Image (cartoon, rainbow, N blue to C red; front, side):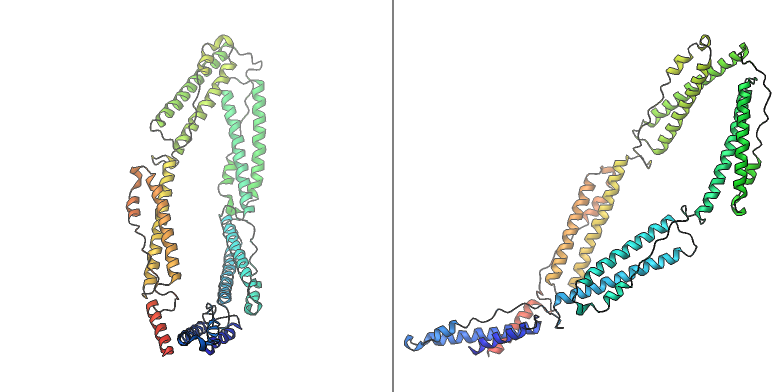
Length: 490
């Protein structure tokens, strides 16, 4: 009865602070063992008595219920439950991580602001760093909030000091080291110069076109005058924009503006525009030539399409070429149609029929984007398989590395077995996914992927031999406990 009471008293004492240390558990286990041993000895002596002499001894022995030894929840004996200790460590670690993320964002912002220019890439990077800092701070705040006030220390203050960054606006969109407003002015000037060049060339082209038949009508003269006026107006606008540019950015623009010489308007030499026979003949010749040109362009597009379709693959370059040929054929046909339509019906002959026979081509879709002779879907499957094999290799190596690390001390704890089982499962699942992707590839594209997968042997998870994780093998722990118990009994 004294041994039973001693165990119960000590249990009550140890449970007052709500935490149980490893030494307290050992003490309670020893007291419980002593109480059980004493009860067994007493039971033997009482059982040996004649019934007439036992009195209330059997009942008193039955009342010796012993104790239920509680589990350790303060392994380091610091007076704080292990869960609270762990939560504090996690909170401190996350606060430090948030501080690092906040500083990384501020450092990168200062770096990017040195040249007073901000590119889209820099904004993307700053947004990423800012988001990371905010998310990490939020995670840290949550962990700190969950701590008892007595354990928070300076963590709330450190979190309040994480002010993050204000991501600046982009002012160098193309990342060329020139502010966008200056770039825009240069671009506007270049665009206007190009526009003026186009207007100048349009006037010259139209003049050349009108002079082809050796005749100039009143309408043509008016058209040329309008084109010349437009060209001069565009040149003046371009000159003004170029003059406003910094000299360092003008480049060849002033010379290009100076080269816009315009045209000399010719005199009308077909005032009534009555289409004299020679002019009609010339128009018919132009129409026939353009129809022949349209037929050649149509055939060129069809021939090239047949050539590109022979291997069953279509690359972006081939689509570009086919689009170019198709556009040329369509434009040439449209030009020929215009010339034929302008002819008197009596001179058209078979030209309308020949134009109607120009059906053009249907541009196929790209199915070999990188032009490597393999269809895009097979290329993508190969890339996915290679990535998954590499991922499987990494998972296999991670498991083997962790096994080697845990085996260094010759002891394996339940936590280590759990971690090894998790790594082994991840490696096996990743390998299975990779195997499925590789098996689905054509044999010609598998390369060394099957060999690499076959080399992923995984690990054999060892059995636990240090259940309580105290750095002593379980059989040695058990022998020690038995010895202590027996010594106490002795």
